[in-house]
Length: 487
Image 1 (cartoon, rainbow, N blue to C red):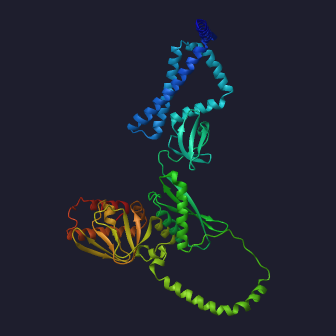
Image 2 (cartoon, rainbow, N blue to C red):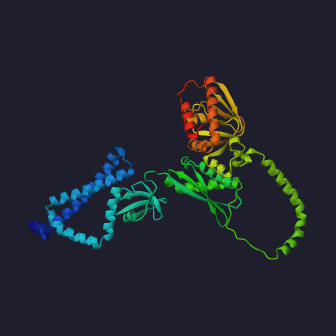
Image 3 (spheres, rainbow, N blue to C red):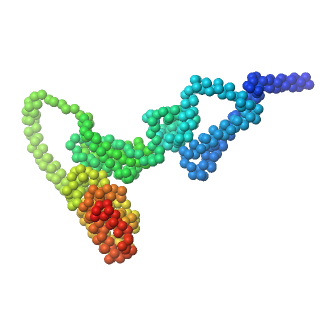
């Protein structure tokens, strides 16, 4: 038994001498197996500690300080690299490694990086550049080389991008430095989308414009400021080319938004009987006269029935066209006194400023005490204005008159409630487009200024407005209209 114990001691002593025996020497430091193993274990410990510390700082401290996701990732990355470098220096010094002895090794490594590891060195430097300059940050929605997605992580060598399909793509950092990058989230997330649409030749351009704008304004993801616009791009081989331009502040939803707009555009075009043509070719037939004579006898008996049917259809269309809901927005605007002399080009610009909306009878259009965000012109029908607070009837407005200007221009809550007396079509203009409209239509600006004076006097006499003096917001609105429009 003692013999076996002695053999084990001798074996362990031999292994200890083997592990402690220097294998090579750099400078004045001798490296043995035990020293190398110790350095490897401590190195893994340094990596783990630096990663855990940076993650803890990112999730606990930086979140409480209110940093956004991109800034947190950049700070955490620098902390991780700094702790790693400091840890390695401490480990080497503790192990008795003379750092000056690594000069020769560093020189050899530099030569190796210069020749054999060029791409790795380029990506390393590019990663440092991305972290310092921050042209892209974690959480940004970017597009590079037709790759569209959200930045998930930025490391020293590569950047991870998650596409809209949920696929994670590892992109070398050098591509972000050498190539053009579209960063949809940089500074202002708002972006403009282009929706091309082709319609049949002969389609009314104003009706097409109204249809496209109506589709855009019905989607909540489309911004009202800047307002949607329609461009006539030109004449294609088989269609008139239009383009709907809309703004959104949700760039990650750009593709779903385009799909939703195309669905809405299709409904609006069908509602207005606007045809979306197929690519077509013209076919020329020789001896067409003989072919016509051949079919004339067969069609003679059917023409009589066709005439009766045509007469019924024409009568139906004529009757239907009398209703205001079947009129185009252009025709309804021309029935308003201050728009009746407008050209088609001026009406096209007017349609871009507002849209028509149908309100059924007895429906509240705007409520007393609510913020004023829209200006209304009555295209068809009538409304009544009354005060719930004062329990007083104020006025009835009919086709061609307007309301909503007082609250909108003065920045005060609605002073009265407006309710439709019958089915009413209103032309609605949002706050941001009202000034543009008044600049182009001075006659309307004159009428608004005059109506402001009349309605102020009426409301004061009824005791609904009592706090106005010479320096009230109304006076400031009058001065502003005079400055802008020379009223």
